[in-house]
Amino acid sequence: MSEKLFAAISKLEKPIEQLLRERRPDCLVSDMFYPWTADVCAQLGIPRILFHVTGLFPLCCEESVRRYAPHEKRPSFYDLEPTYAEHYQNEMGRKLWLVGPVYLFNKAAEEKAERGEKNSIDGGTVLSWLDSKKPNSVIYVSFGSQVRMAPKQFLEIAHGLEASGCPFIWVARDLSKNNEEDKEKREGGEGENGDKMLPDGFEERMTKSGQGLIVRSWAPQLLILEHVAAGGFMTHCGWNSTIEGIGAGIPMITWPLAAEQFFIESLVTDVLKTGIRVENEEWVSLHWEPKVTVTREKVEKAVKWLIGGDGGDQVVEMRRRAREMAEKAKKAMDYGGSSDAAVIVLINELKSRRSVCE
Image (cartoon, rainbow, N blue to C red):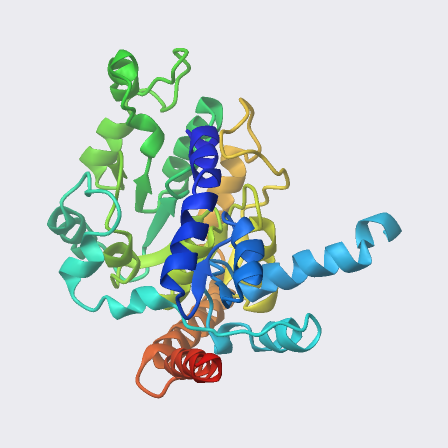
């Protein structure tokens, strides 16, 4: 659907320009998918605020690659990326308001449970399963809402998780398809072309032993990450998932796929030191090519290191850093915190522009 979606977005340019001419708002907030809003706002003299739903670290990396071309030569919050906040403003010369992580406004369990699509599994069922596990013993595996995984790669994950012996919750969205033609195959653990996606008897063994809980569509991610039993998060390093993992104070196993996700992996593993790499080295499209980029052995090794005890004192220290960063995230969103203050500064600037125009 992406091609149709972007075609539809492009058709909004004229209607939005007309709306801006008629209403004359104090500002327009848009993201990277509406680049033409920059020209429209410049023509009309209306401030345009670019809403970045990613971190400063990848933004600074991307800008540095553009400026210095090293390859030819050879919403975050302030305490998460202070060095890159300074770089973004001083070196790149751009104004910045760090107002996140905004999802922390959701305090009630109901608000955390019902986000995005309707959950395919009851939150109470997930929490009851987690309640039966020891603290920091469960790895949560999710690759976001857009990724489609090659059946062979899917199979490797299943083998790796089972071999680790560690409890897991796996959001295996690829097993659930809207196409009725494939429904029977998917429920039987097969891909669109009949490729096997799960080992024989896998779900039955995981259910009987209690080792694994498989979610075929949407999951209450925040409730899972914040549960005391959750000990790690295997993630594709999308910014939303990364921030939610950071806010929950949970270490990560990083498996970047595309876009700026490899930069985010570096932030987590090299800068914050709150995660380890599963060692995917290949950039792939969101619709995965039919090949394996991470073997079952790598999946097993990473899970055992973080959850199974192989990481020893290094994991203890990683958990301490992750909890410390989570506290900083919560303080940023509290009254008087850095993100709270940034929103006030932004509003006051817009007010001052309005008085000048009047």
